[in-house]
Length: 206
Length: 254
Image (cartoon, rainbow over all chains, first blue to last red; front, side, top):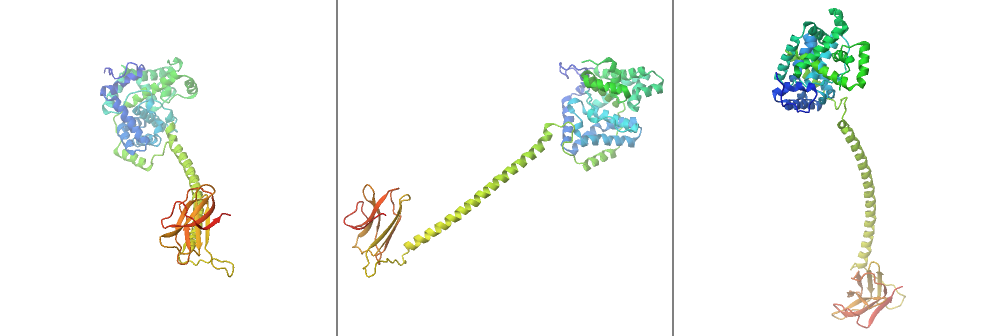
């Protein structure tokens, strides 16, 4: 997949901006941004229809990550409910100037699911979570294309690397725990996790 | 802005929320003063968000949407509960304070107006009473059915008499006469104001009634003329601009 030539102005130097190709290819980047911003604005003003629109757009992403982590549909529904209600109660938690709504919701859902999996109190303050990337997931086509690319990237990784990354991401295991399970050195696990995340970044930057 | 290599791998673990113990403490302390590593952490969280897409596919059951919307309906949004408060969140409080100040100002203004209204009502009542007394005096003095009696020394035949009451500052003059002799046809008495300097000023033409009584109330006069005397002459019915001798009655001011 080629870059969205002409979508980003030449003065955009940050490498992760290249990920905007997803929405650039859809040709509706600005409109999409406005739409997400409009939805959040509606929620800020107490408009319940804004929540319905937000749910219809991102419930699948939130639910599927929670289900993958927890392996239980009822528990995943609880996470889904909790994430959206937190945003309803306090929409100021999401700062639209510092990232896209879809990735932010995915990160929050994963954190909450891991907390539930490990039977622990929430360890991450939502207000502190800043997701500085631009993969706009507002449209179905963009999400499908990004999904395909992520799966392709994970599939092309060496199995030990993918395994380390997935254990950290979906099971919330620390590098020490992964090392104990796999018998690999701590340093190796750390390197595999980081390089796995960087491989995803690279896939959307080229 | 670069990432410190010694923290590069810990940043990835921290983005995933799995960095623990001393390593986490050390990294968080470093992040406080390193913008480059903070930016890298945000980007790693973005990379992590992409991982969620590998799971995308399952959709929540329909009841989940209904459950959420029912919960939303049960919890109407509270105003401005954001942790990143903007100046606009203060607007309702500023407006409320301004309203309170405005209400106090209005209350004070209202109290002042009430006091002024009470004062004006009191003043109006006094003036109405004075006006009523003045009307009664004038009405009595000018009533055609009034009995006018002039008291003189016993066994003295009635003599023509006149009383002039003059207030210079208001150019107000009231003249009452009694026992006047009747006049020939087309003749009338004329009252004159004799100023301290200058020619006599006409002060009203009148004819006595059947009892010899007459009244002149506030004839047109120039303003502020000081009078030294009043006099009466007999003139044509239409009056004269200068008195015609002889003077039939005269009186000086006290």
